[in-house]
Length: 221
Image (cartoon, rainbow, N blue to C red; front, side, top):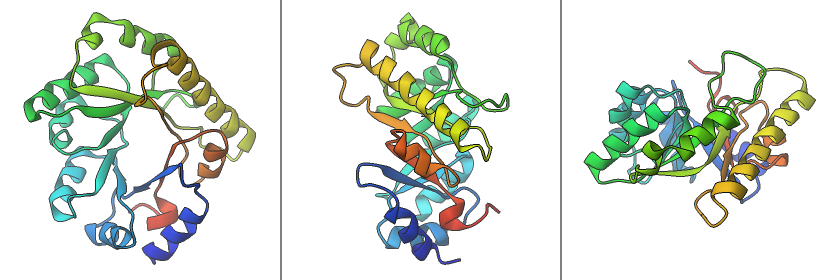
């Protein structure tokens, strides 16, 4: 598995304004180091304890992205160093991230996860539930977290038009939130969508971050 060759191939497809998160979940630190050695700095993990275990073994300028479903009891493992949490989907999780961030004197960046797929198994908010969070007194008091945009996953399907529709839907959610709540907030700018099978469509539909794993590191272990 030549991680560096694969990474170069993927990067050729990605315009400079789009950030590639190399999804290293289940992969050993040696493979992450190999990608790091040719300039990759953003890596994604979906299990908090795995990410916390890898963090001290690798260069400290890596930007770690937590891309999985985050449980409140696991927040404490990643808050000291995480760069961006992609999948916040409840006020409860935001309260916990903020609480842990206060302990470490950090402001932790996060994205709100939206359910745009036609699959019940996916996590995520709808527009109404997101607005309920943003308008709540509890949320407005949280000073140690910063909302930077939205994240979503398309349905696992070969129907590219359906995938495109779902990405467009997420882009429209971003545009509505930007217009209504974050018009003058420069940090609200990220749309995290697209994985190994559909990142090219995601880029066409406005992704600012793509999360690519198997195309770089091979099938998950």
